[in-house]
Every structure is written in C-alpha cells, then in structure tokens.
Amino acid sequence: MDQYLELGKVNNTHGLRGEVKFEYWCDDIKYLKQLKKVYLDDEGKEALTLVNARPQKNIAILKLAEITDIEKAEALKGKVLYCDRDEAEIEDGAFYLADVIGCFVVDDENGNVYGRITDVMNYGSCDIYEMSLQGMRFLLPATPDIIKKVDVEKQEIRIKPMKGLFHEN
Image (cartoon, rainbow, N blue to C red; front, side):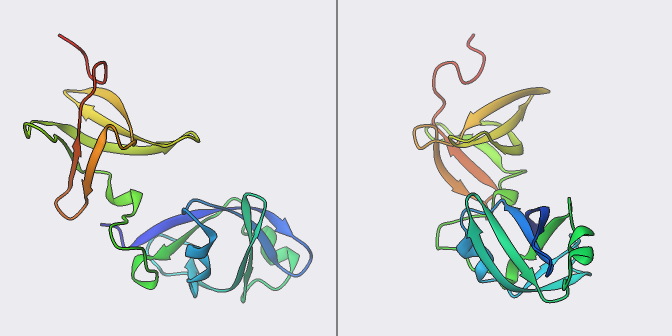
C-alpha cells in the first residue's frame, strides 16, 4: 500500500495572498480539513503546512503557510498534492481507492477468481473498477448489486457477476 496518496490537483490561484483553488479527489472536504500537512511528491519529501481548507462550489480554497503571494501560488498550478495516510483518519469499514488496485475479483457465491483490479475511475454516478482478465479489460460498476464486499487487507473484492458483465459463452 502506498504511504502517500493523491489528494487532488491545484487548478489555479485565488486572490493575491497565495491561496489556491484545489480540485480534491477525496470524498469530502472534511478529509482535507483534518490534515496538517500536504506534500508536493509521493514520497513525503516536500511538505507544505495546510492552514485552512474551505469549500467553494465543487472545489476547495487552500491556504498553505509557505505560499504567501500570488507568484508562489502560480508555481503550484497543475501540481498534484499528496497526504500521508497515517496523518488522516477514515471511518471504520472505509478504504482508500488506491488500495483497491491490485485486489483479486472473486465470485461471492462460488469463490472463482476472475482477475485483478488495474484501475479505478469515476464518471459521476459511481466508481468504476477496471479489471484485467486473460489480457482483456472489463469494467465493473462499484454498485451494491455487483460489489458485495471489499477487503483491502485480504486484497479481495467479492462480486455477484450479473448477466452481460463478462463475455457470455
């Protein structure tokens, strides 16, 4: 499991005092607000102190202690920010989408292994898990009627395969 997880991307500056507009990829701005540090890299080498995160429509406005003017904020445009998974808490039973990648897809009824998750996407209505099976790609909607259990500790996603989900013989 990756220690540093993508939080989202800096889209633009906000004002003249160094605030930035941030497209967050976590479920809720509450997740951002619990963080004290964000990172400019996926190894935690370049930390920035998160002073404030406030909502604005579907993005967040971030104030970072080290970013004090528009010039410094401009330098962050387009950058992905990361968090240390140990510096944030998630609810019991919740999991990070990054941890789903690599999980085996298993039939909930008979235990057959179909393949492994290779990517997670979202086009608005629900997450979509991409699965590789015998060199072919399949998309699994992460809905309760298909995904029965996600256990990232066991690296297993239990599903109820519905007609048409895989090639029918």
